[in-house]
Length: 278
Image 1 (cartoon, rainbow, N blue to C red):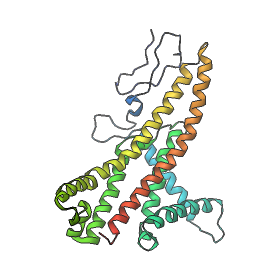
Image 2 (cartoon, one colour):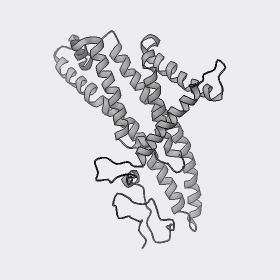
Image 3 (cartoon, rainbow, N blue to C red):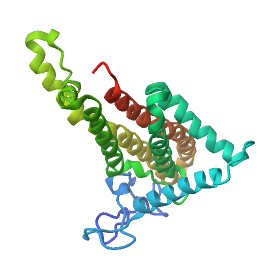
């Protein structure tokens, strides 16, 4: 009975054997955590520092984004060409549709570069999921969304202290309101945990979980399409392949949506730090 091929490294399990199909006596090689683990390209997994596929994709994605905007704006024209027009449309969408709408034009202008950078970086990291040969969303590895969320968290906390001082920031973080009476201490404790502990975690996990689940579903239907390609299973393989196309289209929507939600929440946090009513 055939088993899914396993390399000497237990963290590396092949997605499927090319000659493994239904009715051939081999079980369905379902995707799992092993689908998100990669051998180092440079160095060893036991080393403190090494370089693997996700790091390569993150690096390439950063270069692509920087190269795109550099090419679009290095010689800006009053009547923009196609590349400049696309870049301006994307930049203006985030500036006006997210930053200005959430923070306001006066306060928000200085944060436009950060928010635009976050949006396009996250979007590019998500898009790797459907790019041939890459086929892996970098943000499905929790460390990447976590670092981005921590950047936003540090900015939010520092802005709150800068704008309101220590006492004002404390009230901001704890939702201090004397009208709550006897329940005030409990409410302040819950707000403190929610704002300073839970908020950065949920900010990161929302992006990570969606990309992790989406990639798993794409793998599931892709592997199933090949696995069922045998005998009467060909009919089911066709249905599975249709689901691959449907899920790919759906992932395109989710990838952009999750990048948008991440920067929208970022702007909401910044707006809360700057709001005068605190």
